Image (cartoon, rainbow, N blue to C red; front, side):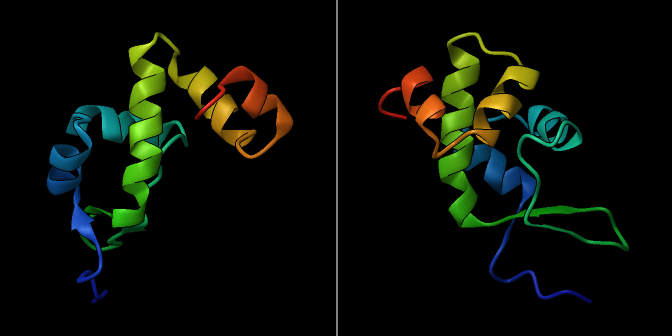
Length: 90
């Protein structure tokens, strides 16, 4: 069994990130926000508290109208000059 004491289950992460469980599963399926740990036996998703920053950025991008595929593409360029030009202050 995996030690999950440093992680939070999807419901708790959903509450803290203000992203629905359904959307978290959708983001996982599309490689946008992958859980830090998935229990092989149960399939339960566990998130790291450090992922809340990513979730906040994803939520903001979604709120201004970006779709999942665009969010994924933007996150892939995070830290680059292109990302900084596209999303100043992000």
